[in-house]
Image 1 (cartoon, rainbow over the protein chains, first blue to last red):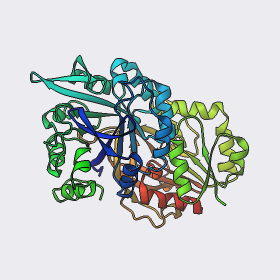
Image 2 (cartoon, chains in turn blue, purple):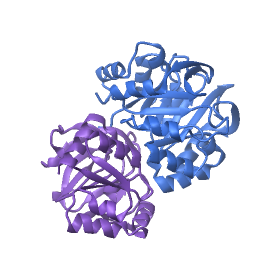
Image 3 (cartoon, rainbow over the protein chains, first blue to last red):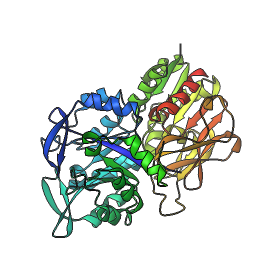
Image 4 (cartoon, one colour):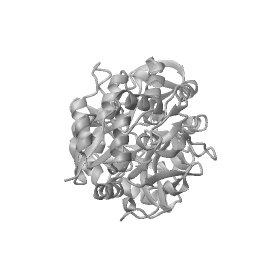
Length: 251
Length: 205
């Protein structure tokens, strides 16, 4: 049976790893290579690396940096941040990404999703959707949460599926870094309306939050950052916890 | 010395495969050059991408003919990975009907979910259950999890080519073996310890 994936998230900004709250108040959390080595040793299910300043600084992905750390990364790797075109995707796959995560560029040009999916296969095209709840309505944000759009969330999620996305990385901006739990209502809203896998992101603070996102909201994978950076909790312990409660994990 | 030609036809996670081969004690060359491929003791065909474009790239560069000579005639040990496994089929129905290398009797079709919890693409860790003994599966336990990321799978017409199955959308073929030709639907280069054992087994052939 397919296992639920536990995905540590590494956010990269201005030369180092950071973690914030609600896409703001970033604080440095240490060296990238060190983090990669630790997760490699711990045999995590998958690693998500997002360069959160690239798009806003109008920069391409830092291919050299990614090439360097991907060489040490013998686990599945998803890379995002600064992807603008097919060439960027091709380059990232070549240097070691297994999947690429596209946010702003996918929103601004949905044809990029189709083109990428036709060329590289839907399985490696992750569309990242950042969501904030405003007046009890879900709003899609782009540019690392800096720019609000008028797109209806459900319509957008269905559209990216139709256009060839292989997976959705669904992040609640409100819950990001709060460690109060995933927005399960949001996640379920999307998992029940698309048939591609959905990665839940934003809000994990304890193992039970992951359990809820999987059991109640039917996430195919749970991404988490703060819980692993700021607490003693580890991906392995998280999986032990889930396994005891009947969730299929790789262990 | 095990010189491993990793075929570069413009569509693969070439660096990952190269690094994994290095870690497993082989000498990888990422290449599309005739002489490199002719001198290799082992050949790996990786692949991330859509079938029609991949076949077009192989045919345009005449790599399909060169591979046939090395693998079918000269019997050099060969390993196809992910799309590199699917390309061995007679044909594929991904995007449009396309003829494959035709080394394995079978065709490539999309996974069909049995229920709403089976989402496509099949992404993540899943079991590889052995149904036949093979040196490529030595020292790996049947039922261990390997990393998959795909929407299509190869249906083998010849049951004796099937080495292992994986439970998703029914059971699909995850490892095949036919003489010196081996292939896996999963990514051993990303499957950590078990994946490396699998690659080491290949290098021993």
